[in-house]
Amino acid sequence: MRLSDFIRSRTSEIVQEWEKFARTCLPAASAMDDERLRDHVVELLEFIAKDMDSPQNDLEQAEKAAGRGPKSSADSKGEEHAVVRVAEGFTIDQVVGEFRALRASVLHLRAKEPATESDVAEITRFNESIDQVLSESVARHTKLVADVLRDANRQKDEFISTLSHELRNPLSAISSCAQILASSETKDPMVARVVDMLSRQTGHLSRLLEDLLDVARISRQRIILKMEAADIRTCVQDALDANSQLIAQKRQVTKVGMPSMPLTMQIDCTRIAQVLSNLVNNAAKYSTTGSTIKVSLTIEADHAAIRVKDDGVGIEPELLPHMFDAFYANQTGNLAKQGLGIGLWLSRQLIEMQGGTITVHSEGPGTGAEFCVRLPLQAVQR
Image (cartoon, rainbow, N blue to C red):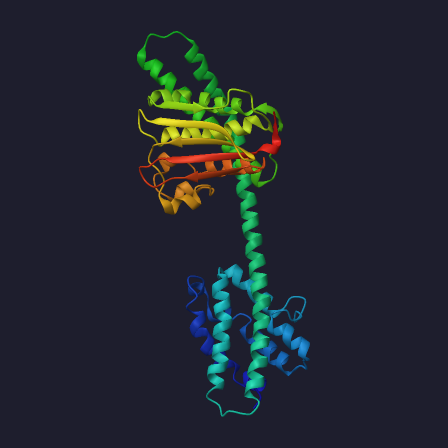
């Protein structure tokens, strides 16, 4: 009996054998009845048997063996199977596993039959047919999941943008009240402390909202850089000024090294200062009271390099490759101390948009860290 006829005559047994594996595809399979679990399997077997019976030249055989055979129909059984499996929550590995199990079920039952001279050729043809259906199913599954993720990412960006905008107005009102209170003369030390705390926290929230808005803008490719001639030393000083209060509170010392002459570059100075401010803020936040923060601006080969170095807590080696990943801080422990994990990701995006790079180096816990921003010198006008 030809293998294609064997598949048709033993379909029920093949499906029962295959179902043993399909039931292990958890958690999706646990919520499915037999009919839903067996979806398209009988049709898949019939298509494979029919394909094995159809004539095929050497080129068609080679293409099919490479997974590049012509689609069986406008919307093949393999693709239909993928659509259902995505809806049921099957992973790509589980879908691939289903086809492997289907192949194994056919060959396992066939092995119990007496061997024939045509077995090798027919099994080869069977493998080509099932691989073609598998290729179609995997391609559709991958596309569907990518579409779902893209839609979810777009909705996330829209939510972040809307939320940030909605929070701006009440935060602005609170900030204005804090400024009014700060400008009034009060001799009550408790009131003074509350006003100071209110001012600092509203400032922190304002920066956080701006970062969230920038994340949404970059993700949606709507951020616009204002490139203009500016002395990059001004960017460095702006970053230091923005963190002067935190540095003073922790009685930290800043050692700054910069050229005495202007270093004019075609840059978005506001964005460069934003990046450097984040780096200086991190250096202060992750260093102890009384520690030293070193900030330097130098020319190295064909780049201007700005380094921010601290002698604080340092970074574990396994974390270094992920320091610029979005939201990575949320996965590493103390969220209250580490924040949302968007500052360094955002910094890298803003620097790379200006043709530069940002890197980090640390010898490990307790040894401090050094971040280096490099911008190409071809943008320099001296």
